[in-house]
Length: 172
Length: 151
Image (cartoon, rainbow over all chains, first blue to last red; front, side, top):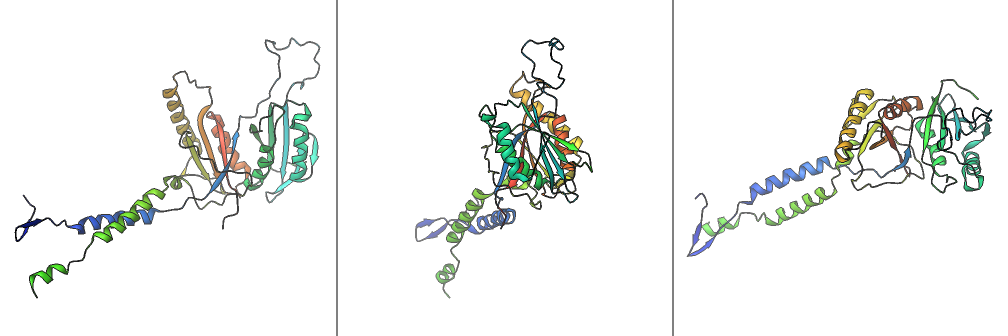
């Protein structure tokens, strides 16, 4: 009804008004240009972080207290403890694996390879990382990076860690 | 001027429309709504072994931006850590139960917590957020880092 038809000597042609469509298209284009943000290429380290809990290696069906000849209260607690002290400015200070100090990340990596690796024969069920409260995220990630590069005795990559915060001012 | 020459002075908008539609198609294809959930003002640490992971949308992710003052930011807004994590944990639990009616309260939540923290953030502030997530049943975490220095 509202369409206009032009008659030119008997031949019929319909002209679309493209201006309205162009307006809309420009509005869409403006929206996409204004909201365009190139996403940065970020990586990630996947971890399974259970809360830190003591792990007891009890035999299947073993009830508490029925191993009468065991006089060692910490036997079978297969937890490896890594301690990272922070300097006052939040950098990595002293580090230790168990009771033994390690000097730097390279030494930490070497020590973890010895302790966790397939040759060690150890079966750690849990790795607890004790971290100084001031340690910056950047420094923590360097330690996590070293830990997650390790392969456990069962051939799996180490991804299961637990974090424990050391009190402010804790020193070796 | 004749009537015929006046009609010919109208510009032909078809090529322009074609070009605009091509540009729109380009921007529609490259638009990334995921970037809206990221606080791009944060300076992430650089870790060589951090690799980009594309879950193809199969995993439920909860992105937490943490600035150097320990403030939790979600879609640009500061949130209270305790109430926000509790709400998200409930939503994740409900979704898990819908999918698997045998899912129990004690089970680990299937959602992965993606932590994007500023490299200067002290561990004590970051640990508060991690501990709160753990208290609410989250166990899967992804710590974000750049795998090369930003240019």
